[in-house]
Amino acid sequence: MRCRILVLCAFICLLVILTEARQRKVNHSADRRSLAVRSGHRNERSSALHGRGLAARSRNQRKRRLNAAKRSRRKRNLARKSNRKIRAKTESIVRSDSSYATLPLDFQQNFVRTTDNLRSEKAFLANRYGFSFAKSSGTATLKNTANMEYTCKMNIGTPKQKFTVLPDTGSSNIWVPGPHCKSKACKKHKQYHPAKSSTYVKNGKSFAITYGSGSVAGVLAKDTVRIAGLVVTNQTFAMTTKEPGTTFVTSNFDGILGLGYRSIAVDNVKTLVQNMCSEDVITSCKFAICMKGGGSSSRGGAIIFGSSNTSAYSGSNSYTYTPVTKKGYWQFTLQDIYVGGTKVSGSVQAIVDSGTSLITAPTAIYNKINKVIGCRATSSGECWMKCAKKIPDFTFVIAGKKFVVKGNKMKLKVRTNRGRTVCISAVTEVPDEPVILGDAFIRHFCTEFDLANNRIGFAATTYST
Image (tube, rainbow, N blue to C red; front, side, top):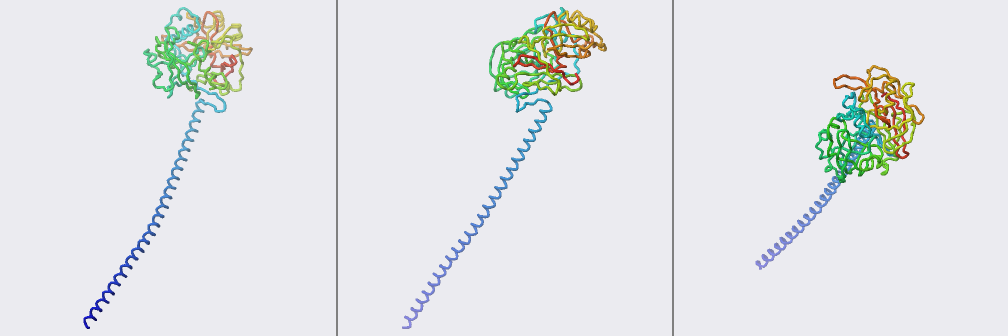
């Protein structure tokens, strides 16, 4: 009996122990689930906080990027405004409301000719217009034509290759030194390299212009030409392969910018201004040249393409127009020439030629001029005088209006081979018409070249020359 009671007590104790163990296990599992839930809540709160932090940082980064973009735009706008101011100061402006542009001319300061380059220039003119000067100048070797004082800037190709050129209304072609030219003149100047231009188009046709000591030879090509901000695509020009003698060795320009009519262009090449008109680069088919010189400025005036608004140079002075009498050179009828009160010429044909500094006159007119001003004529077709000598004013009558050039402006300083400086008349002798009006005349009158109406206009300048 006692044994049974002990067994029953042990069994009851075992049940109690097992029940307590099961309860502890349930409690422990509940605690773990509670911890997991609390941990999940903490993680969710942490993720939310982290997400809000990232969003804030992202907003800040976007704000910084926007501010940087604004600063960059502000800098670009300031740079554009600065560039516009600079272009305005240099007068090289392309107007958006009307297609025209102003190209500054550069002036060679303190230039004094030598007798050699004076006669070289005369030989240059003789070959251009097909007449001869006095014997001693007819065979002169062309050298140092740096007395072509007025030059301008022109770009060819893409990217731009920059050149200094002589604006020449007495010819109609553009030419610059080519890459294969071995002449001394080419090596001393900038050369065009077609391989460096993505817009170059091969032509290959031969080209030649005759000057006093030989022909400038080369080949034709096409490329984009930029001048004064105006762009002409597929402009035909010449790359020289030969520039003989010393003609262009010491010149202050690389090549020539021809501004005459197409009818005198070598190989009948379409001129730059004609292309400007046909491509609507300029709205008015005309250009004007205003030259100035003297003083300390190297700026020598400007060429205005597509407009005759030259008020910056001619003030309120109006233009007087006369028709072109022969399309080729810019030729017109010059009605009369006076020196002082003496009439030295009646009606003659005249040509405006920006490629020379001289004025020419047929022998009969030349002799009358020399008699009035009292200079000493030489066998080479010049008339010498002392620089202190006073000479009367010259009056040129065009379309009924008198254009007066002060007498002291009709003298040119020349340095002799012995180093002596003398003065000569700006008028030099040729056997016959036409009269050539070069820079000595153009410097005092803005000159408009109107292709649309085939006329030439003149307006007196307002600045000191």
